[in-house]
Length: 324
Image (cartoon, rainbow, N blue to C red; front, side, top):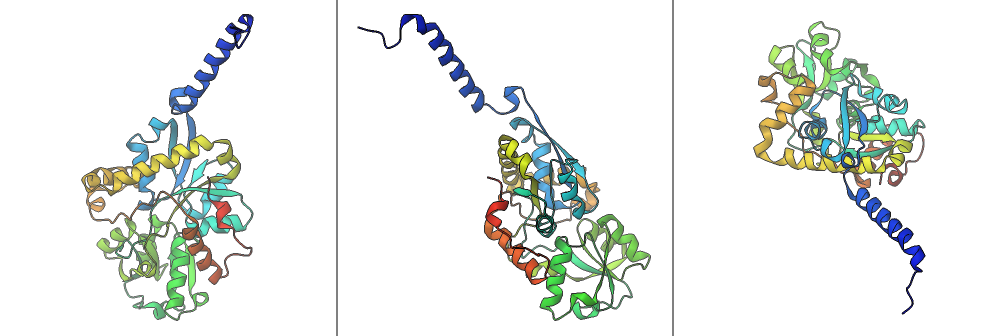
């Protein structure tokens, strides 16, 4: 019987077969097992919406997938896209409105996942007025100076939508950009009449007596809309497809951990490490439902809201904005 391959070719064939098998096996292993570790500096702001990031880091979900993720605090959310563009951050968590504005402005960034989501029962975000400001409802905001943790960011955009829904022209309200940690001091000092803020900073303001809640205004939104998007430059994501997939898988695992009531204390411990909260504050704040996977419908919701506020100049193809 004639051999399929000449005997003189057999050793080379065996070597190629072994090599091919080794390459296939290596491709199936996690990144770290292959002797590599992808470094990702991730920009976050001091809110609970980044719980999946913190849990994935502290529970080792990134590490076991060969990712060396370094969470880096960024005071103002609108600063994140520029830092991602410059490669100071490889990934970051802008709010949907900040992200879409950056894309509209020419940055080629994609969504790799999501942080927190909206929920009707969430009272961790609100309009908090300074004592003596006279602000009791939406109409009272006219002519007032109101602090927001980022012009064009989530709280600013949703607050303007709430004002409109209550018959108030947002153009007649003076908005001042101020980071979350400044809110209490600016109210106490009288620099602002009110702030659009979130826990844990809202809880601190209320406990200190510096202000009172006028409205937990975000409850007008439907459930399940993303409050934070995890993003990266498109070229970086394309060059690091395995890392993007591993990052997403790690945050999905973190979301499952967060959703298990048995892990509540541990989740709050991880939050406290990164947003610097004392145990007594951690025990009281709400943690929104995690939403690690983002779809076109969710992005379209934000596009429509921003178009209504004339915040986008160009058409947006949401299908092209989600990393595969």
